[in-house]
Image (cartoon, rainbow, N blue to C red):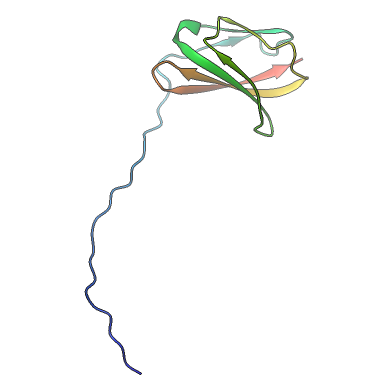
Length: 98
């Protein structure tokens, strides 16, 4: 049995990606570890805050945060605090709740 395959078309394709770069503004979170309140510097640049536990489960979202994040209702442990910036970038901070 003989068969032929022809009419190949080869096109160059572009890969759409966005470049990951260091955040323009380093925002600090303190105190770390915290008990009730986690303070963030430059909160005027932050659109919203997402807090996830170590399993990646979203446990809290704060829209238009102030400089003091009230997180006293969280259990003790490690959390990933994602700062969603007004310019569209993101910054993640590891924070420990005592």
